[in-house]
Length: 143
Image 1 (cartoon, rainbow, N blue to C red):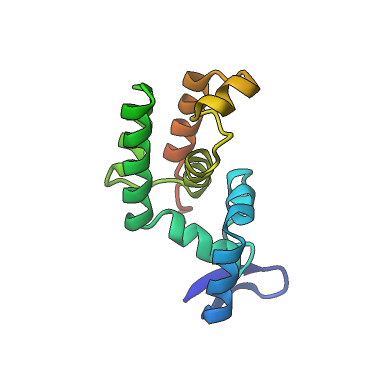
Image 2 (image 1 turned 135 degrees about the horizontal axis):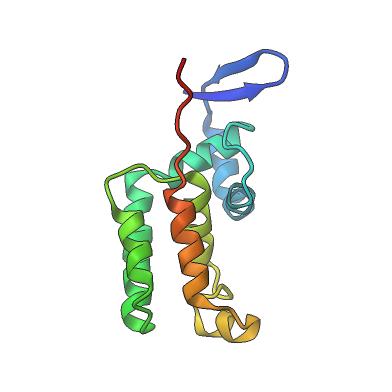
């Protein structure tokens, strides 16, 4: 079950079905782009499911391993701090994890030689920004 913001009813509980899960798999990149831009994970079922996937232990482990490979093979030691943030046991922000997912899976991103060269990307600044985004976990409202 997931909670979705609803403009009429406030918050509603939804039980995602097989078609919802399939839609998330088919549109993962678009959902990641939305979440990386700051779209609320509570917007709808696909965004909520994708957010749940991105912050899962499995995805965190997979992304941490990919970042380690990129750091070692690509000679990018600055990725170690990002890998540590992703692999840590503390909470992570959905927005930051979506950014990491896009960086790792997009061959034209700044983490790959072609992407960095074409776009003239400062990889250290990029990694620093994404590392901060991973750590930006919203504090739950109290009261």
